[in-house]
Length: 229
Image: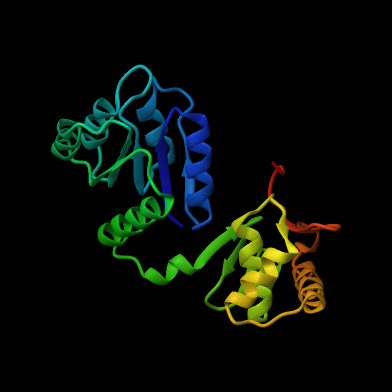
């Protein structure tokens, strides 16, 4: 599991990026004191750094220089500044890529994966793994594993779990689930959905996660994790 240090002072954006990256099994850390970025870097020992240019105290270029003086860890700049000199400066300082705000999260994920793959030469099958409630969810093998054991799900059960986790702590309507399953050519009725969700919850209960799938009467289902939003 790769560790990513996200040096971003916009709390809303930080939380959103962290949430998206966490869904791909990355451990994401932030900076509390922007006067001591290097201490945070030393404490985390990240495999990749994502950094904004405009930061409190010192800008991202300063911290990029500092990081480069100690480490060859890959660095991605994430900034609303779009002047060519900013992009040139970031590359001259040793950054691996420059992503301009606003951006598509799919593009950010793709660049993170490509950079880690190039630098660490890891197996791309890792992208099939996601974490949820401390468990490793393997979409390729249809398994969920934590310290209490491992369970094997059917393809329909895993498909439903994947959809719920993709919007964790948010209600996914029954119609949305049925339509997604139907579009995926997994022909399913309203009653079949109920049976599959109940079976999924029972299987998850074997490793202590049954209560993490919550039924919202008259609405749909919710995959819980942490504090619901």
